[in-house]
Amino acid sequence: MAYTNALSAYKETRIRTASQGQLIIMLYEEAVKQLDRGLELMGLNVSGKKDPARIESIGKAIVKARDIVTELMVSLDFEQGGEIAKNLFALYTWFNKELLEAHMGMDISRIAAVKNMINNLRGAWMEIAAKTSAEGRPVEGVNIAG
Image (tube, helix red, strand yellow):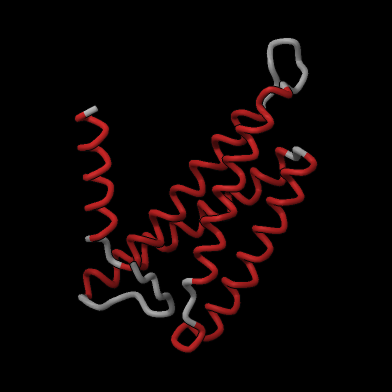
């Protein structure tokens, strides 16, 4: 029990003290983690058939990933972000549409494609966050308020 409380406190402190860039990276990482979980659960069982008992867990993982993408959408600052914010909004909208359709059809390849794109964005944000923190200035174009 104490371990769980300590872990929760650590996670909360990590989030509260993170920069905007770090928060975005954390959101991307969690989305990838959830999509990995969904893909893992979508795998075939020993008999070679999909396991219907996993459907609820698969759905929860995909819905969590979609919720994260939605959070990323609402955090965009179109005034400061300009064309990049518009492009990210369109991409996030596509991610959510793809994940919804992939979930309904249990389409592993579509989920994997979205996961790979989110992972690529995470890598790009890691570079941006490292560069802006080295220069001592905040990441512009997003507004993650807690």
